[in-house]
Length: 101
Image 1 (cartoon, helix red, strand yellow):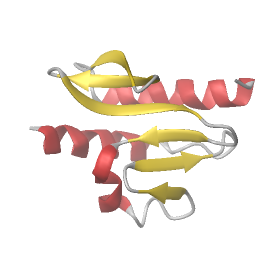
Image 2 (cartoon, rainbow, N blue to C red; image 1 turned 90 degrees about the vertical axis):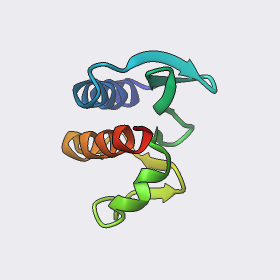
Image 3 (cartoon, rainbow, N blue to C red; image 1 turned 60 degrees about the vertical axis):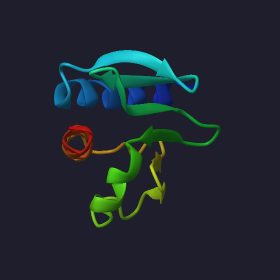
């Protein structure tokens, strides 16, 4: 993994931890992930030409904020030189926590 991807993913991890301090880190589908109360919360990891954040279906609620990023259901792809803003990551994680109840 390149140093810029590593830095972008570390920043993403920090934002996830800030939004979900009670979540525990784990590995899910061979990706670093977070679990809350034993349930999958979010995952992230490097791709061949991008970094990925996997917040589940909550990404659909933030289409406007995610404009400019490559998205599909449950996935947000971004380049290391254009990381996701920490504020947006926290919003996505918090909505995901609410969704999981």
